[in-house]
Image (cartoon, rainbow, N blue to C red; front, side, top):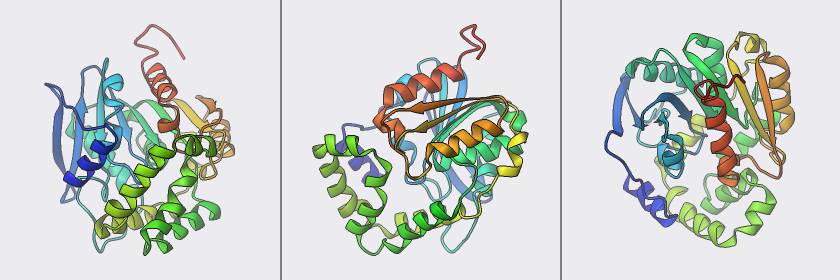
Length: 294
């Protein structure tokens, strides 16, 4: 925890909690799962990308919780949740974790949102438990792990022995070249910290390996018709990990969906286009509350 707080402090993102915020744990299959709730109002559950944690969202907490209850959670093998050392699993277990979280919070329905890995979990959750989903909002996602994405994940695990090589394999590709090249100081500080503090941490790396492999068999192509809730699908123009053709396919298969392209953005669209990220998420999540029908 202190290590990640130090990292956030480097970026000016030291967590700030307000009265009424809940930082807690619940039991899921004998594992401790960490979660947070911020603000009051209709709940939005926001699911992490694969290398993220609840701490990754703290610059977004204030705007996203101004009129909503923002719920953040660390998946198994992420952040402050328990690790699955010596175990293997698929991302089905993360779907069940989300269901348990909603039950723990006594939510009958919520807006379910997610980015990348978390967005794929959100999609699968909507196919399995549509009755819990008020709205579905997913960024930079796909309907299945194809050979391209699986081989990319394998390249991650094979580069873990060298922190700099692991950084070079995993980090530049998630950003657009324009963003990466235009922020050299930000990139340098991030690279120095990750390669000396995070990517040398065996617990973190073992967790990333299990998380990556949990998505190897992910495939909901034949289940997309089960998604009946209103859905917003957002993709990026420059995303080699989940190219826009993946989101277009989802839009074609999910009947009640809208599709948005973020020009010039890479896979980590929430960091490159934070204002757009917040506006799209809140606008779609709350449209009915504002008297609009999307």
